[in-house]
Structure formats: structure tokens, C-alpha cells
Image (cartoon, rainbow, N blue to C red; front, side, top):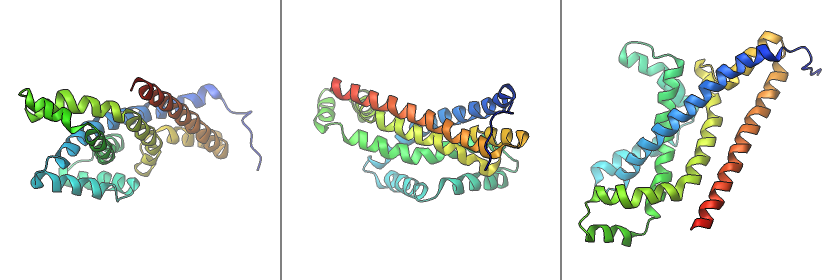
Length: 221
């Protein structure tokens, strides 16, 4: 196999890659923010002690965590247009899918974070006249977010890796950018190798930042 990067126009190739990279970042941020927001609500439902809230939340989490992401992406892309009567487009469909899917994973992280807060702190909140919602807002959730921040960020790194699966519905992500560049320059092998290196550098760097953050949080405690 003859590998060569000598005849590639890097100025032109960057236009393909940057376009896909921007969408991958957008998808990651939207799914992270939306997933944490929905996941926190789902976690509170599972910890509410009310069966009519707990059972649907548990079903939601266990179902999505048991299905491969690529299948969920295809389901949303193919089924939602049938339900609403019009196509959403690959990019919007991917954002909805990732947000809904990642919420199941973020909810379990947040549930563990909420359970890590000592119960006597909640009891103290009730003792001074706080409601359940106030205890969660001012006592439990701030500590839960801080306790679980490294895990939340680690899940976000995994989320960025998973964005490459949107190729299944034709969305233009980072991997798609490398694929298009490879076809244009007739260098598919080189571009896929470069894509692998790019994903490795980004994810490894982010993982190191998360590890440093985890050490700082541990020191503060």
C-alpha cells in the first residue's frame, strides 16, 4: 500500500474538514446541554419515590441504554418524518437523537451525584423551612454537579466520539469531511488515517484536561 500526503492541497482540504468539525462541535454542545438538562429531570423523577414518575423514567433510561446509538439515529431519522408529515433533515434529526439518547446516560450520572449528597444536609434544609424544590436547587444539585463534573465531562468526550455515527443518515460531521476530502483527492486511506489521528488527539487532550480537573476537585475537598 502506497501512502502519500505529498500531492494534497491542505488549504482546500481544510475547508472540507473545518465544516464537518464545526457541526461535530455544535452537535456535542447541544446534546451535552440538552442531555444534562433532561437527564437531571429524569434523575429527579427516578428519585422522587412516586411510582407514576419513577417507572416511566426507569423505562426511558433502561430502554435507551439497551439499544445501539446508530439504531436510535436511524429510527429518529426515518420515523419522525412519518409522524410529523415532513422531513427534519439529517443535522436537526441528529441533534434531537443525540440529546434524547445522551439524556439517559447523563441521568444515571446525575442520579449518582444526587445520592452522593449526605441526607443530613437535606434534613437541615427542611429544618429551616425549605421546600423539596428549594433543597434540590440550593443544596443538592450544586453539590451533585460538582461531584459528578469529571464524569459528566468524560461522558461528553465519549459523546464527541459518537458523533461520527451520524454518517448513517448522511449528516456532514468531522468524519464526513475527511471522507469527502479523501474522495476528492483520491486518497481515502490517508484521509481515514488522518481522521483517526485527529479524533485521538482531540479526545486524548480532553481526557487529560478532565483528569487534571478531577485532581483539582479532589484537592479542594
